[in-house]
Length: 429
Image (cartoon, rainbow, N blue to C red; front, side, top):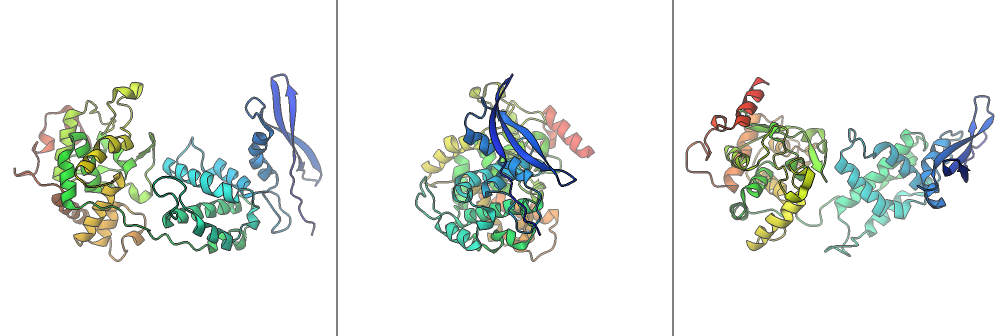
């Protein structure tokens, strides 16, 4: 059988009436087995100022030109970098986030750019071996920040391996690599995701001290986070229309990362979350203060004058709230360094400490895999989830002395127009 030849093609610079352009020329096989010369304009010289930039642009074109393979194992792409470019074009486009969340794409791109491409970009996919990748992962260490010089976290190494595996599978799916088991060496790369350090978790007394030291906006944010285990993007992605005060629950349907609104992390994450009476009380207190009260308004809409035209149209930057208000308060109280994820870890720890049903814990944290929370129980019922959550809230925040647990009384009886509308609209559903 005749071996297929990999076609490099030819990149040339040509003058046209509109200006100079880069052209990629290659031979296209016809149905009668003859070949015909084809030409594709890669881009203008004004846009791609150097030949190197134009060559990088044609990597995906070159991969598509060489999709035909006659002999199993014949090369389909020149380098792993060209395969990555094809993966970026098909799987990581930033104009559509239906298949992958924006946060996932940003994380994957950072790993590709910082770690994978510099080390493996110029290798042929067939030259990347499992043992070599395993040794490389073992050698990785942080190159900046307070952890500079320390080994890279096991979880990060697992993600790097998984992204490389996704690129190989992508190549096989698009027939750029042979569909044989050996085409994906990541399958045999061993890498533990065990934590190197225990996540920071707040003691009950520490949270109570911090809660009491914050203003209403920050109080509401940390209570929702620590009392429901919301992820940071889910917290700032909440809109008033997502809160059902009549049923005492909120719907987690979006996540905002770097001011880009998209899908939540996993399908399991898109669930309703119960709201304890005290949490409703704090939400009402914040509702009375914020000028943005419409169902489509962000619960934590930015009211900063520096937001300019985006004032009220986007949420607060959570990193700014943490850096300017929450961390300083924590430092004054001697709590130490914390982050938004600290509250989610605290919620999880208190649920486990209270001896809650692992299935209830899984659903409250909205984990997609029961491996995180030990899959040994059946589906949890809503009443069990509500009781489990309330036990945590009762621990971290002292209840008001008045009966009913709400400073403002029943939220459905308040005289705010939106609340009445919200209750009626939710009740109709």
